[in-house]
Length: 72
Image (cartoon, rainbow, N blue to C red):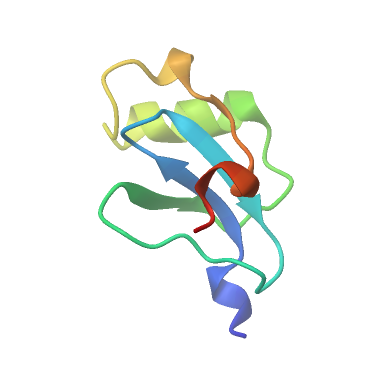
C-alpha cells in the first residue's frame, strides 16, 4: 500500500471526514476528496482547508464520520 493515500478524506455530499491510516479501506468515487496527508489533523484545520479550497458551501457543517458508514 502506498502511504501517500493515507490521510483525511472528505465526503462532499455528506460533509463527513474519515481518517485513513491503513490500507483496510481507501475512499473512492467522485464524492470523496483527499484533504490532507496529516492523519492527526484537527476538525478545525480540516474545515479551514475545505474553506480555502472551496470544496463545500458550509465547511462549518463538516463532522467526523466512520469508515463503517461508507465501506461497502
